[in-house]
Amino acid sequence: MLDLNLEGREPIARELHAALRQQILRGVLVPGTAISEAPIAGRLSVSRTPVREVFRRLADEGLLEIRPQVGTFVAPIRLSAVHDGQFVRETLECRTVRLAAEAAGRDGAGLAGQLEAQRLAVAARDEVAFFGSDERLHSELTRLAGRPAVWDVIQGVKVQLDRVRYLSFASQDWFEMLLVEHERLVERVLDGDADGAEAVMRGHLRTVFAAIERLLHSKPEFFSPRR
Image (cartoon, rainbow, N blue to C red; front, side, top):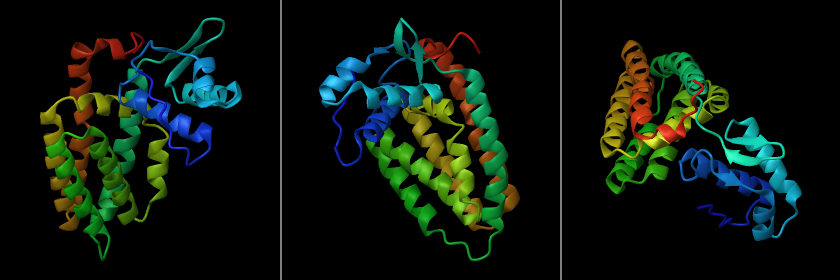
C-alpha cells in the first residue's frame, strides 16, 4: 500500500523521493509492484513533472525499473550490488574504526547515546528507530576518526545492502545480535583497542552474508534472479 502522507515541510519532489525510497527500502513496496506517475500526481495535486523526476532518481539508485511503453516497477534486490556495498563498507569502515580507536581525546557520549537508543528500539521492536540509530552510530565513528566525509561515500553505494538490512529486522534475534555487536564495537573503540575494533567491525559487516542466505529461502521474491 503506497503511503503518501507527506508533511509538506520541504519541496514536494524531495519529500516524495524520501517517502518512496523509504517504503522500498523497508520492503513495504515489494519488487514488481507497479507505480504510476498520474495517480501520484493527482493525489498530491501537482504536475507529473516532479513525480517523473523522482522516478528517475529512484531508477538511478536501482530502486525502480522504468520500462518504456510498459510501466514503472519496484526493482528487485541485486545481489551483486549488495556485495559491492558490503565490500566498500568493510574496506572503509575497518580503516576508519582503527583511526577512531587510535584518536586522542575520544568522546564516547555520542556512541553511548546511540547504544541507549538502540536498546529502546530493540525493546519496542521499532525497526525504523533502530536503523536510524545504527546509521548514526556508524557515522559517529567516522567523525571520531576525523573522516566524516567517508560516511557520505558509503551512503552512495549501500542502497541495495540497506534493503537486505531492513528485511533482516523481521527477526528479533537479529535486532539483539546487532545491538550486542555494536556494544562490543564501542567498547573496543573507547578502550583504544584498534586491532579489536577492526576485528569486531569486520565480523559485524559480514553478518549480511548470513542474512542473504536466509532471505533467499524465506523471501525469494525480493531478489533478482540475475545475481
